[in-house]
Length: 177
Image 1 (cartoon, rainbow, N blue to C red):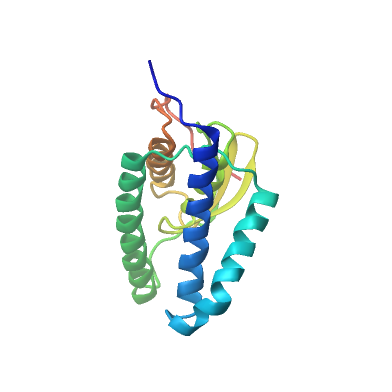
Image 2: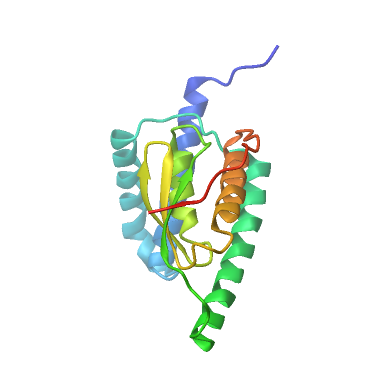
């Protein structure tokens, strides 16, 4: 029998996570200045209270192992993207075929789709443009490149982070707008 976590504990954990997130943001914005905390602590408390007013507490659905895998993948792809952009600057005659790609999403409708759209912008030569129902529209520098494969891999990593088991769907077609 699985033990249920009390709702009070979940709210306390959510409040702690939000407060720590706001504190980290405050620390970064103030460059670690210790004197800023006299103003920062009340602002962090207000930000946490306002965040609860705008977004009620909920159980987090992020799986730690999936999040770690996604973080490593994200780091690797960010590094690769930087190298790719630098090589395009150095070789301006690289063959490009810019256009829009429609990627059919397998993720269920939830915040994972927004993460997918934002993270797609970090792949080399792609920019998440729009979420249209079950389709993510991406602007690609080269629609002939492996954009669909990259998006499929990214979606699987995000699915793993959220605990979704995304079975590889049958051949997804690359459709351009």
